[in-house]
Image (tube, rainbow, N blue to C red; front, side, top):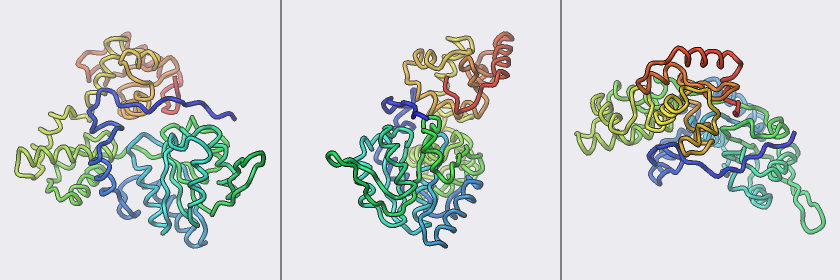
Length: 363
C-alpha cells in the first residue's frame, strides 16, 4: 500500500492566543516537563491503555528484552508524549525523542540508531509526517534490528541495538499499512472526563505550589476540552489572575472570572471554536459543507480544523462529519445563539444517517 502524501507545513490553531496554540512558549515547555508524570502510578486516566502497556512493560522487563513497538494515536494533548517518557522510565532505559518532520532523510534516522542503547526507547512524534523513504527504512529496523543505507554504489546494513519504537500520531490514516502492521500495539487515547481532569488540575496545582479549592479544580477541569494539556494551561492562566488580582488562592469565583476573561465559556469552547461554528451556521446555513470550503471561509488551514477543533466539537455533539461534508448539529446552533431551522435539522439528520461521522474520515 502506497503511503499517503502529507506535505503541509505545521499549522496554527484557529483564532487562538499563543498559549493555546502549537507555538508554545518556553514557559509552556518547561512547565509541561515539570508537570509530566514519570510513572504509571502518577499517570491519571486512560485506564484501559495503561493496563495494556503495563503488561507489555512487565513482560519486557521479565524477559530482559526490548518491549514491543507501540503506536499511540488520538487528538493532540492527551498524553502521547507523556506515555513515551513513562514507558522509558518504567523500563529503566534511555529515551531518544524525535519529530517526524525533523527526520528529513535517512541520515538523520541513522544518527539516532547509531547512538541508541540496548533496549532504549525511540520516540517519534507526528510519525505520520515522516518522508516515505524514511518510513520504509524503519521496516527492517523494527523487525530485524538492522538499518539499510546506501554508501556509494553499495547498500550496507548497519546493526541496530534492540530498541522499542514508540510512535505518536493524530492521523493513523496517513500511515502506510506496512508500518502499522509492525507495531505490536496500536492504542487510541480518549478524551478525559471532568473528574479526571479535576484530579490532574489538583496534582499540577500541588506541584506548582498553587492553593486551589476542589470546586475550582473541577471548574477548570470541565472547561478543559477533555485534554490534560488544556487543563494545565488554563490552570496557569487562572493562577496569574489569582496572584495579580487576589491573594493567590484559586477559588471557584476566581476561576470562573479568569476563564471568562480568557474567552473560555462554560462548555469549554473558546474563540476559535465559536468562529468555526459561526461560519458553519451563518455562511453555510449549517452545511453540509466541504472542509476545504469551510477552511477557506475562515482563512485557515484544513489541518487546523481537522486536528485541533473538530475532534472535540464532534465528541461533544456540535458538528458531524458526513459523506457530504461538515454539518452543524443542534448544539452548534445553540452555541451561536440561533434556533436550528427545521430544514437544517432534517438535512443534518439525513446526512448523519448516511454513514459519516467517523473521526478518521477525510472529506
